[in-house]
Image (cartoon, rainbow, N blue to C red; front, side, top):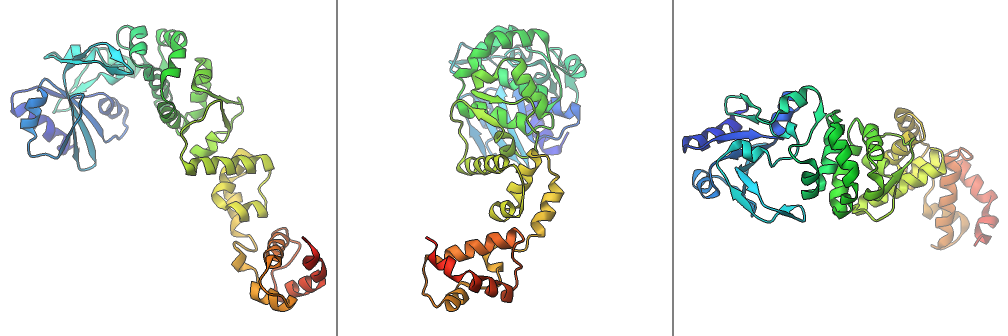
Length: 368
């Protein structure tokens, strides 16, 4: 255990209280995964924690959680509690208790209820080690009640199964299918956040397959083909998904998805596409089209021009050649030169370009 985390646990114990790391950090540590988000549970009350950490820079939430940032670690400290009836995914009230096991029973999945003391010893009161060894996602307690309390647990179950490459317990699968409509109560921001994590996992295809098998796609407002191409780019993944309702994409994400879709519908990566949109879009769309990323990048590096400034004649030189003042003709001629050079119909040599412009002067000036 890293010293900054151990120090926090020891500091709580120095005041006569229990303190354990619980949840994701313990799970990930046992799986050999590095993580920097730490959850600590304790029988110390919030008022006690305020005294214990009076010299720390802490944030205190209305749900009784202290947030402490120590180096690269984000540490949440909560008092053992029972939660009353849920309302909109939040408990209407919390009751502080002095029993670790009772606190663990309110959590979602057995693998997220493992604890670790300051010496690195594992405390398993719910059977999480067995499910971790069997690579199984199993709900704690009444599954139907847990999913109704917080429908996000449906997508969290899928996400953990995918990112950890685990399977879902058969009883959990049954209840997810029975409760699938609850997903509609989740905000689109929540849905997208979980979908982001599924799509960026190395098991993304398994995740998408699982969403379909569990009959969740309809209630998430998404659809996709079975032959969707898995890419390492989130916008590349989203460009292959259709949405029945608007998701909260950023302006940049919307633009990226739009361009990738356009290139894929164009059906090919050529010099003109790479010149217009650049290597990022070319490689992402190219991957969806079945092209090798390195080949696409090499194509980009070998473009005869990368910007208008690379054309071996300037706008001023075109005006002098045509004896005209600045006007729309210049922009139109430059666009034609760009295209002809990129398509390989014109060599980017000044003398050759001048001969080409003189040969087409009347046509270029007459075109509207």
